[in-house]
Image 1 (spheres, one colour):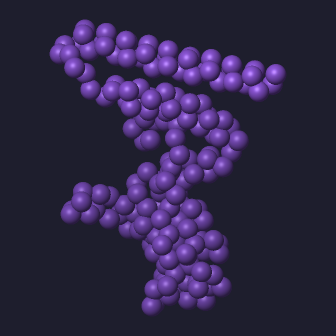
Image 2 (tube, one colour; image 1 turned 90 degrees about the horizontal axis):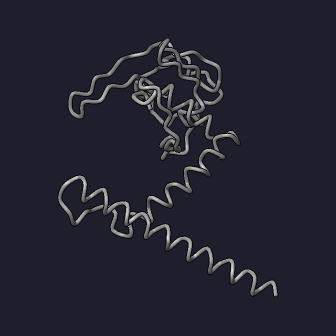
Image 3 (cartoon, helix red, strand yellow; image 1 turned 90 degrees about the vertical axis):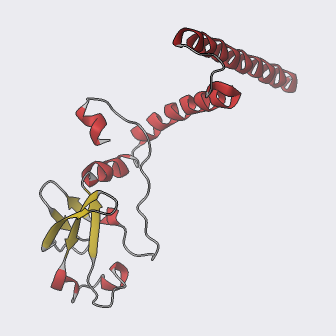
Length: 175
């Protein structure tokens, strides 16, 4: 999403939900501002420490926010963490702002309308690939392009036939 934004493009698609195997408060319930390196927990406490973590093993970079002693007397502590010391840490990627924005956007009606259009296109692409559109039996760009045009035409004809059958069936049931 960050790369697309830099290039002036928009990617339309859902974001993965945050993983929460322990049924604790989600990362989405924290207001995290990576650019300013601040995070506010659901109880309203601002993080006291932000660390930039470079994982050499898998080459990832993330930010870890900690609340330290603020968790000790918090009324949400039992819902927030299961650690022995009772303190919560949140680790997020360097583009978490975009991810958090997308997750909030996913709840709007405008986004649902965009996704409805995207789902129609994905169905078309899926049908094309199921009909053999992933591989070409020809070498060279010109022959492969022509084969793709014929493949697309065949998929469209198939769809028109199914639509005509559906309309005939609908008229037969109405009569």
